[in-house]
Image (cartoon, rainbow, N blue to C red; front, side):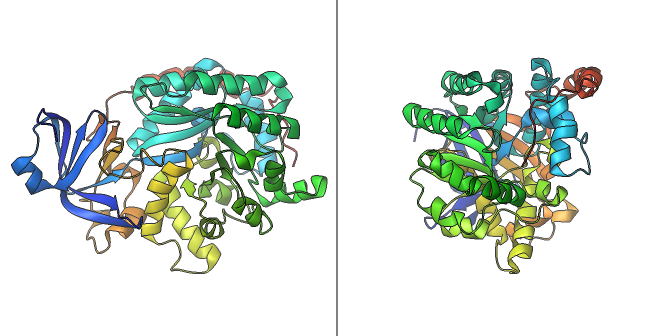
Length: 452
């Protein structure tokens, strides 16, 4: 251990840790030492106080729990600008009548302001990394670099854009991977099998393997898509991905509520690293009949990360809510109160979510050598007392507003609820001035057609 001062010392907290069986546990009265953006040690507070390093910055975290920063495994961050615009609609009308017409108005400035607002919302809610799938991603990457959060970014494309859509997605991924001091990773981002042709999907798979890039896309989002795909092609969306070679890549599938039994052996045979992101609030809102089949996927060893989707469908970027809803909906769907316990939900929110976005070796747990993405959660409020079962308190009683401090790569981005890297009132003022032009649908255009 170095004798020069550490960068950050967090003392007196309870720390969520993972044992060698990957079960979550809690270390009481602990201290976390951070140096050069990494966790140097996790030990007893008394022992660190007696022998440990002085630190340039110290946080007294008594009464708080230190968790690995949460990961939002699938979102469209700039869509916070459309929060609450398309309500109480079936999926097809939501896309065709509101969202895709409005997105035809999007400018880079709208994307920038939406990304700023989204990053502020996520940092305030203890999300330290998000996987984003959208347009004008150069702009999003610049916001990520500036505000200090971590992100896994992909420039989305439809086949209706012609070959340049796919080329732009590749060019973005190659240019930005490893930027923002390593906080940005990238993926190729075809939109979905119903908006991207088999030829483009196969070409994307080849590019992914050639350049060592992962792929992030929507697939089997709901049962209707699976039924339509079977009727039109004789294949499920998952089988379409397999035929295109995408299951040989590191693949992140958004939603997957339309994954059916015949897809499971196909996913099990996948030679790449497959993961699924679940965003349960949107499925409830759209009244989809099924949810992500987490139990079946976990039996195959497929990690299921937690997500919010965009705020146009979910209305928030609150991964705490995704964590609680995932646990509750899984219990209800499986008819088993013992399935998806609070501890399992915390595992989904931490290590599994980190794996889903390809960062399972560097984030997702608080342990020596990991990147210092840490959040401190205050459990002294009346709604989180008394604590009989700490995991249950975190998943079912705590709220995102209980996050007091958010740290990414050892840098404090929010301290005692104060954002240090973003000016929310300025963003909101500027965005409000742009809303009339953004939401105008009188032009009759839309960026794409939803037809499944």
